[in-house]
Length: 497
Image (cartoon, rainbow, N blue to C red; front, side, top):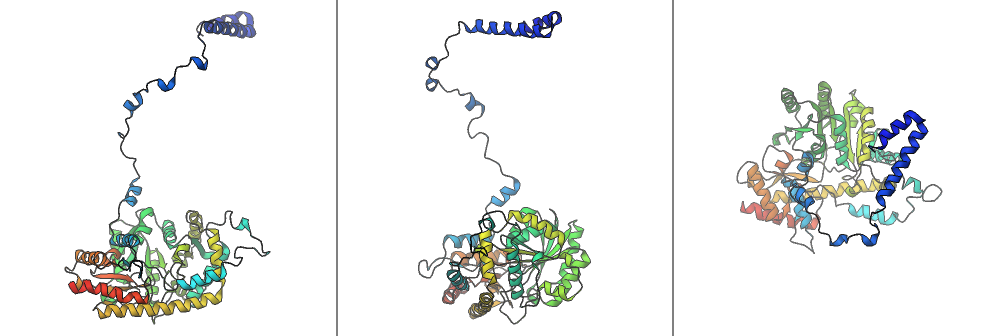
């Protein structure tokens, strides 16, 4: 090319562009033919045996295997992947590995740490057996609507299911309040519901005020991915762990001094783990508090229909209907896992009075949408008014009976429980059986119950209770025949302490 380029310039200058292009190209190709004339054949028969050639070690020298270290995770991923030594999760894992069964594994671990209702599963089973044979997924013409089943549907839930859920929530509240489907966003369980709502209300580094003791799963459900801080607001046994507005005020002011922005108050009603109900006056006070501070109120009401005491459950929605509060800052978390005892169906509810929250949550629901076949099945179940009415009635009766049996059994062992009216658990005071009145003493008793008595309970420290010695005991995973066995195992530990 060093010869051709200058020659091209000369020819172009004298003979024009055409000659200046043709002559250099012809010379270039003749030169290539001359070079190839004596070149040996490059046929496959003359190629060297590549398999016999020694492999170069240069790659191994440049990047020896294993020298670069382990593949790194993000700090968030590493934090989540790290083994969790929280007793709540340790106990759940142990029970999964060695579950109690009255005949096949009588010496296994008895599960009192999981808020799951097995008391009325037979009713759900019987309904499914009787009805799943019917054409639940057929359209009005009696044909399978594959486009309505296998194609994309609204991420925030089918309108028919929203209508059915709104009706069910109204039945749970015994007709005291009506819910509107347009204010519902459906998610794959209450866990993504509360996380999605948290995304909508607060930024990383912001905080929620949470009366304690509180559900230990919130530390995972809210904090892991949102970066939101949960500020515990201690409640005390002297007033049955009821919410104190004065304590909320103190916690809010302390957070403000630390430069932490508080965005909401988060409560559960009925309380988890105590089981007490928030009365109407306290709901008024909470609404006044959030309006004064210009923050939000989140009311987790997943156990609204799982009540058994004499006190009537009052939803924050009922209070809003009767008084002139700013509805835009009020949000309800609900689901079908507890009151309908179908946690495997994964149905959670965000019920909000704020249009912007609903718009954002509807978009975020694409990350936790419910499968369409599941929604179609639930529409059929919830639309059967006769079955739902009977189910709610029988389920409450079974909850009341099991609660009474379990609490009476603990009472005979000298263990008192906080006064409660809802949920799948009782809040038991075992402080007199701990050797040292602190968290260490409580965890030592928990360890004995888990490893010696083979009973999994949730210690109060996992629920951020400031008074050591309290334990959450879920009784809805037991049968009546299991209660004497549980009591005998507990007695074996308490007697030695």
